[in-house]
Image 1: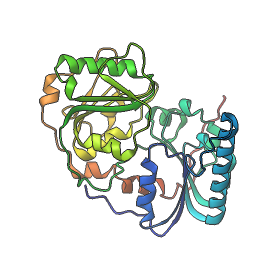
Image 2: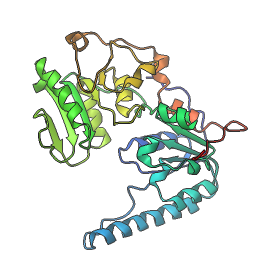
Image 3: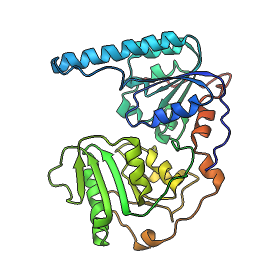
Length: 329
């Protein structure tokens, strides 16, 4: 994949976030090649304090992380742009401090507003607000923006060592994944599939599922993706936005099986490549598994690159941005 030109050059940018998956660090590194990027990840920055009691340890760790972040914002001085990802998950004094330092402040919601418990009036303090969830964009009049391909190229070896692969966190989608695993079992593919769930073992779950506790890093996950023929995505209840798995599939030419029907609205959707299933009664045709992948136009793939994403996010806002609706009538 040849990325389009990055329009943001020689700017000072703060990215303020909780980068649990490592996807935002990839974005920060990409932008940092031609800009001065201050990347502040509030999941990192303080040493573990095992000798303290649990509640005190968590409080002190958070205090030290926020203290270090505030110092980083002060040291940055005035910046051209600020990107805050999921602001409701962050210390609000810290968010306000970062906004005051930036000529342009942008919020990106990579989760649903209901799950984030996102106060709508807080979003009104940003120059631009994007959400990955189309339903939230329509309801709250926000800008819809998908996630992005976090690799700059596709020069990696890909194989079909595994017929299907999924990794997901939490136990709330285990029942749906179990039914998908059963469908693969009926087709005789169970032994070549990787169904991984980061969670304590769930009683009664499909024996095809493997539970584990330590979160996979982005490189380990990407290696499974590159070695798999089909990727599986089970959407969280109440979500309509697309996970990063779809964009990995787009880059590496991998088929997808998902219960997220909203993918049909995207320009890269092709039923030969993406199978939309019913959560309660998933049907996986043999013809989908054995059919050829349909190559997409290069310009479609380029549209989901980090450069395209950043060009949109850091573009100047319209002269009179639309007002957000009031939280109450």
